[in-house]
Image 1 (tube, one colour):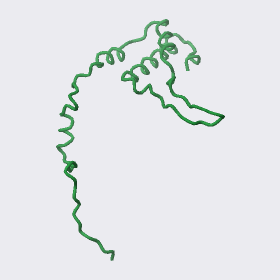
Image 2 (cartoon, helix red, strand yellow):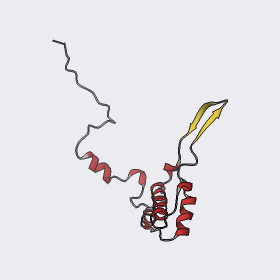
Image 3 (cartoon, one colour):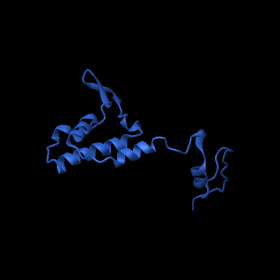
Image 4 (tube, one colour):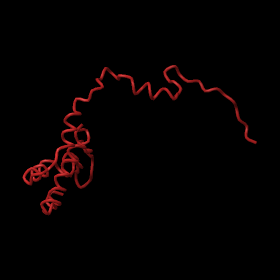
Length: 121
């Protein structure tokens, strides 16, 4: 039988044991003085509720919003990749709304207008 020891674990003062009430406390706390009101929420809601009902508007949206992040790059020197710049589009707080808007515009062009959208992909 292996030999075991019963040693107490000493936690530093800044570590608190988890309790069931702790997540509720953290959710109610106001971190770093940030307001609970999301300033961009009305804009997010407007973009999510925007309906595409115009062919020209759908083409404009599909052209303006890129299919993939234009900032993502591989830096190549003498045929070897020396660095990679990650996609920074997800740092945009409205990224999901823009992607959804572009998707709705492309769906409108295919479903309602019967157009080929391969040029936008």
